[in-house]
Length: 185
Image (cartoon, rainbow, N blue to C red; front, side):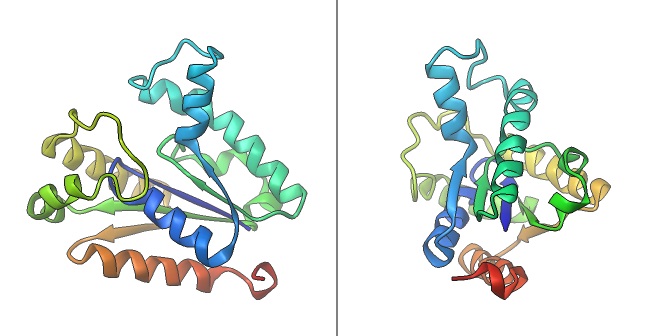
């Protein structure tokens, strides 16, 4: 089983992926690690600021990793923000039946009332080297765009509206429940 977790910056993708890693014992691919490996090894001239171009660059690689895992009957969690909202077009039906997708979206009200907490929790799983460009306005804009894209493409999304810890725990349990018994240890 492949679990794809996407969403805007600071929505809890890595936190959820780490939680699933611990409970499911699945392998885990961070698109941020892939991105930085390719940038630091000079395999691309793209920079960390080239978000749209990074989707186009990283998705074909990520897609083939997913296909390889499915073909080899391996479980994998893929986490990152470089997943296009038309990702399903990259797979035929035999692959799609082995993929669970979830997008984390924070509501505008949640972002406004919890922005300081969101910033304070930014290093929960990984140390962010520079978080200075995070802004309330950009978070609202990005999460609204992701919500619209999920609705347009009929993709599963989890709205984080009031109680982050509870809502993430509920999603964790929902994903575990959607995984067939034969995929679990």
